[in-house]
Image 1 (cartoon, rainbow, N blue to C red):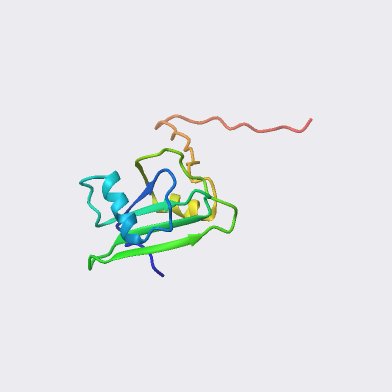
Image 2: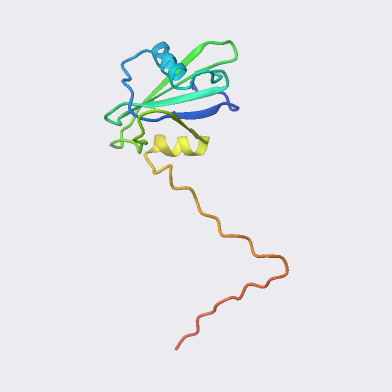
Length: 127
């Protein structure tokens, strides 16, 4: 499968992009939005206006520009509405995005109890 390297940082390019452009034009868009940003070891993800297609580009170890497109069959993706910029995502978040789930809903962890503190247990008693 055509996937970015495991160590690559994943950047979601906010706003909508005309995905009829080729991978080299998308790379130019990345260069214009993030001047001076290293392109190697990064993966950039784009979405079309209909939110029905996602395209990612990245450079491999041999400095080749790779491209991967996904048509969403579930009726769209949740995409940020900002016009410019990028957001960094984890691999887990990008997988949620591709599955059509709400990738923004990060699990909230309960704080760990302090050492030596006993947490009371509540038991229900039948009436």
